[in-house]
Length: 169
Image 1 (cartoon, rainbow, N blue to C red):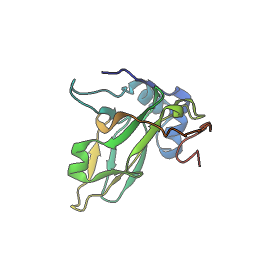
Image 2 (tube, rainbow, N blue to C red):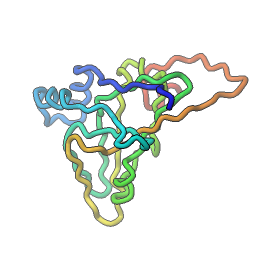
Image 3 (cartoon, rainbow, N blue to C red):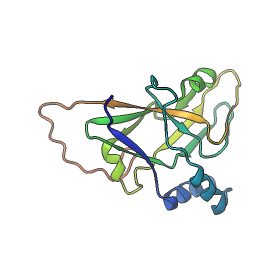
Image 4 (cartoon, rainbow, N blue to C red):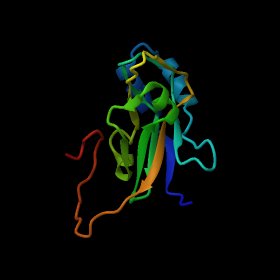
């Protein structure tokens, strides 16, 4: 296996600000405790392709509801590799849990962005069976898979990333 990446936490300040932005009901003390408990993504078995991302807090999604999760995670990736983020397979199967951007794409240069390369996962429970999803703090809810990619022989991209979510166009 090629070792091409390393998961790290974003700074405490970044995580606190990110959680407060979308979840103002949490106190700063509660968010600091969440930060301390953040578990870096990991594989469940030696044959797993996906690195599980763990919920930093409990959340509940009724059918049709959407949530943006600040994971507290960033990732350093070798150039010519990318991290794809998907819902955990079982959650997609049981609840039609979907990422709002279909597949999250984390480029190697995202690591150095102003937001520290903080990975957010925006999910929608698209259940057509009326099922409500409940995820406990520390449970896997998404998975990331590293893929190698190539570029065209005449590629001359020299732009510099500063942000995410369409920051380059």
